Image 1 (cartoon, rainbow, N blue to C red):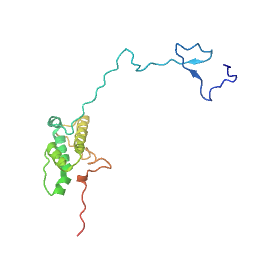
Image 2 (cartoon, one colour):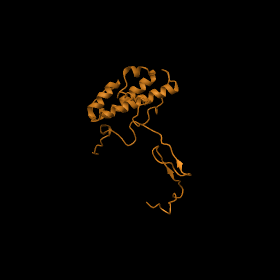
Image 3 (cartoon, rainbow, N blue to C red):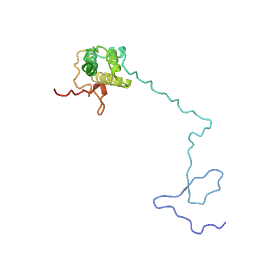
Image 4 (cartoon, rainbow, N blue to C red):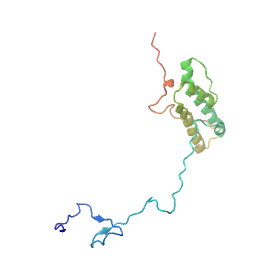
Length: 169
């Protein structure tokens, strides 16, 4: 085989690197050798740490979780749950009393086709719990009106919560 009389120089801005394994012949001087790092080659050795998944939170906060909140925060949370089911009451012309989280959940599940909408109740509770802990709320602390944020996330309102417009008579 006739060697190539014109060797190809490296492209502008880069340099030529040659990866060599023990069975290859020695390289000419001036060539940079890069050592590979073995990763996950299946050989015996130290095992990676076990993967653990976080236990998913239940859709609704439990009575024990709610009982840990200060009294004013529990009252504000109950009022927020009642506000969530208010469109259901207006639409059905009934008075569903949502004194507890379970009552609000039952009311929502009766009209909703998506049980994930209960996560809005969990979101309200988590937000309230974080604020109470961060600000050191007590039973006498007034909960600010904007503590919960918007009733529904931006761009999403459940079908059962949209007000139906009645034609003018």
